[in-house]
Amino acid sequence: MVNSFIVNFSLLFTFSVVITYVLNISILHQQSLYKTRRVLLGIMVGATCILLMINAYELSEQFLISFFHIPLTYVALYYSPWVSLPAAMVAAAGRLLFYSPYMSSLVGTLDILVMVTLIIGASIMIRKTFASFMTVTTIYTLQNVVIIYFLLDGGWVWSEGIFYSIASLATAFLFHYMVHLVQQYHLMNKLYEERARIDGLTGVYNRRELDQHLEYLAFKRHPFTLMLIDIDNFKTFNDEKGHQTGDEILVEAAGRMKESIREQGSVYRYGGEEFVVILENDNRLSVPLLAESIRQRIKDDYIVTTTSEKLNITASIGVASCYDYEQSPKEILKMADEAMYKAKTSGKNRAVYA
Image (cartoon, rainbow, N blue to C red; front, side, top):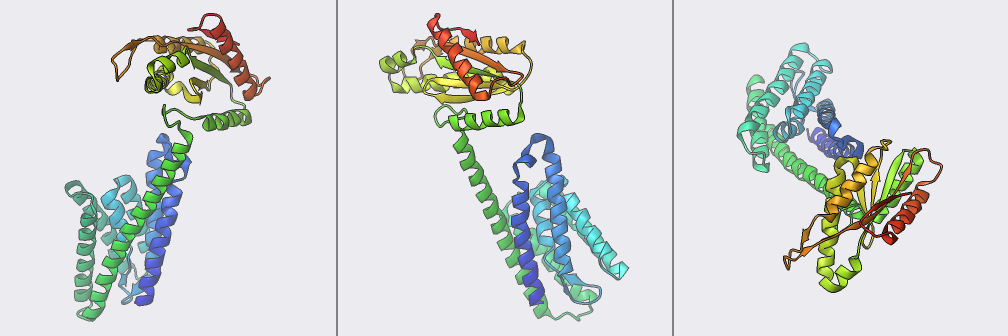
């Protein structure tokens, strides 16, 4: 019994780490793959349950005891039916197909399906907390002990039942702790990666992310339009109104750019008061409309938070497009910079096209 429980314990922790790692692959976090990701989690949990049952402790030819109920309880309590039902079906199929005699396997299969169905129903009424998880695990473990004891007509000594109960609850406790620890690690890692991509002041992408995006565009040879946007007279605002006001202007301008383009592109802080907007499309008619939308949106009156003073902010925009890759993305950036300089020298508050 001890050896089987140790193997179950090891498998449970190994697969909790592997499953969490697989689910954190970036491609699976696309919104369109939400349900697919959930079903994949259920299938992996079900496969884990099969391995746990394969390494179960055989009380008799009819009865197996393992820790398969722990991951099933966890996903049924914390996740949606998109996870728990595939997990239960895979585990039940494994119990039915890989074990004999047939009747005991059928009973075990029904036990898995009923258990998960009851927990899904209970999850609607109870809070999804550690205490609930441990309570459900305890109830299932104790009912297992009692049922097996009576079905074996007292042939299972209580000391084994007590040991199984303690081992089951201890494993459930450590499993819950381990899963949340691994999830926290991935969340923190994702947060650090996101911070490395984002400009700390304005909340838009930073120069490093811009360089990587331009490299990606060069590799994929996607058509795109690049706008280099410079806030007019920013140094004057900064010197006369103070750096805090200057920072407010940058944050507000960045927010207005994001609002103007919405899902059609991405905004980057190029440096100082300069921003870059990249539009990945081949719709040449929409480019002037978006450039004008950005210019007008930035031009709207802005009220300084600290002094309630109304300011009029404008921007000069240089626009360059790449449709056939006669120029590299870096050359397109240079062309946009030259166009932006022309916008500055010809009166500001305008968009000039390369």
